[in-house]
Amino acid sequence: MNELIENIKAGLDKWGEFAEIILDALSLLCIIAGIIISLVRAVEYRRRSPGDHPLHKQFRMIFGGWLVVALEFQLAADIASTIVSPTSAHLIELGAIALVRTFLNYFLGKELKEDNQLLRSRMEKNRRTELNAVTD
Image (cartoon, rainbow, N blue to C red):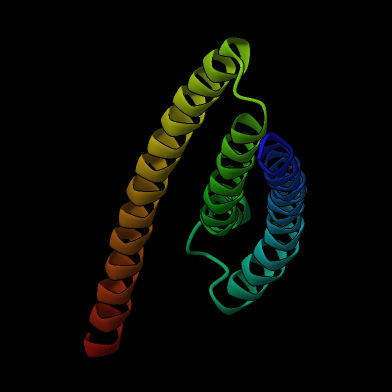
């Protein structure tokens, strides 16, 4: 019976390590895809609306969403790692990492929301200005 339990634990450890690797890879893919997609979309948007806002603002708004997803995958990978080897040191490390990543996600999300509202207000102001110029 003990042998069966040890085999099950070994199998779970391997699956946990595999999950950690997959989640880390997904996080990295999100960052790489986010950089490429954000750059392409920011340049396209800049071509369509050259005077709306600086190029880096659009890039940051798009990439920020990708970064939030990547951080979520990283947190999941850390949880999987701790499940595989739940020592006190790993649990404390996971708690610290989770706290830091939660704060990063919160403040990044807040900043993105504020930037998005600012962008919308600028776009609305530009539309009103264009409409006033057409009607004058």
